[in-house]
Amino acid sequence: MLSIVINGQKHELDEDPNMPLLWVLRDILNLKGTKFGCGKGLCGACTVHLNGAAVRSCSMPLAAVAGQDIRTIESLSDDGSHPVQQAWQELNVAQCGYCQCGQMMNAAALLKQNSKPSDADIDAAMEGNICRCGTYPRIKAAIKFAADLATEVKS
Ligand code: FES
Ligand code: FES
Image 1 (cartoon, rainbow, N blue to C red):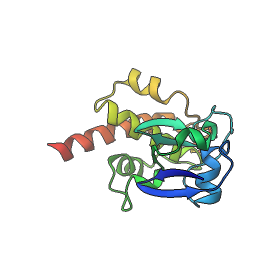
Image 2: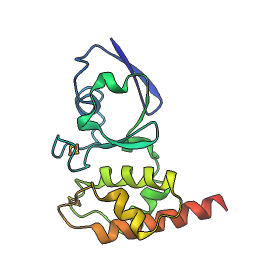
Image 3: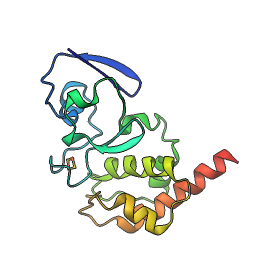
Image 4: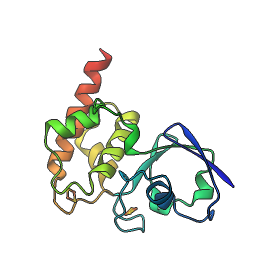
C-alpha cells in the first residue's frame, strides 16, 4: 500500500509501485487534465508539480512520489482565477488544446521561481513542452501577461 498526496488530498493506493504517476492520475483518480503525449518524458503534455517543481508524470513511478506534494492542473484554481489561467484565456492561447495543461503547469512553476522571467528564461524553462499547433508565441506572451497579473495582485 502506498500513500500519495494529490492536490492536498491523501490517497492510499494498492497498485504496482512502478506504475507511472500519469496512469495513477488519469486511470485511478480520474484526474483527466494531465495528458498523455509521448509517454517517454519528451513532450511535456503530462507535466505536474512535485514539491513545486515541474516534472513529467509519465516518467515518475508511483513509489518515487509517495508522500510528496503533487499538484495537477486541477489545483491551479476552480474558478479560473490563477494568473496563468486568466492569461491563457485572455490571449486565447490554445488551439487544439492538447498540450496546454502541461504548458500551463510548466509556466506556473516557472513563475513561482521567477516572477519576472525574460524571453531567455521563458525559452529555457519551456523548451521541453512541445506544441504541435505552434502556439509558442502566444504561450510566451501569456507567461509575461500572467507575470504582470500576479504582480498586480501582490501590489
Ligand atoms: S507524455 Fe510525459 S513527457 Fe510526453
Ligand atoms: S495547442 Fe495543439 S498541441 Fe498545443
